[in-house]
Image (cartoon, rainbow, N blue to C red; front, side, top):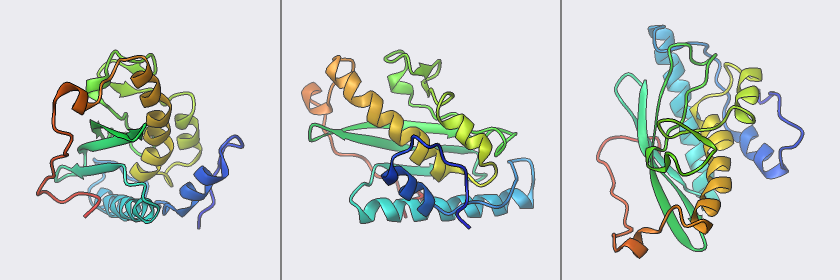
Length: 189
């Protein structure tokens, strides 16, 4: 059930996390009607399981919600560095060729602050995550992309951006650090 190709360089903790996220079975994209609805159910199941896993180990780090069609996703992601929470808007759109082609994760407010990002605030995943995704299509989904794409990107980039003074904590700017919550259903509900 949890058989997929994993890079040899991956640490044991990451492998364990990835192996606990349910794999998806339906190969369908946004234009595939009822099959897309089935794929979305599998996506939500995997996301809910991933959120539960993260909460169990006190590693809650994102909130997501989608539009009614499941094609546009928005939310927040955050990274704790030196006991401070750095929070960012995150968004992505599911491409027509999904799941064969992965989606591009965007953090618009960080655009231009790191070389590991493309125009529009799209984080760079080409060298590490996209080959893993292509070897595991259609089994990987949104939860896998967050675990293997966004999480390691945040862990590598946020401390570097803070140390270089390219991002500043909200408290240093005099902005409240409390996050707003949405009344709309999300993957963490």
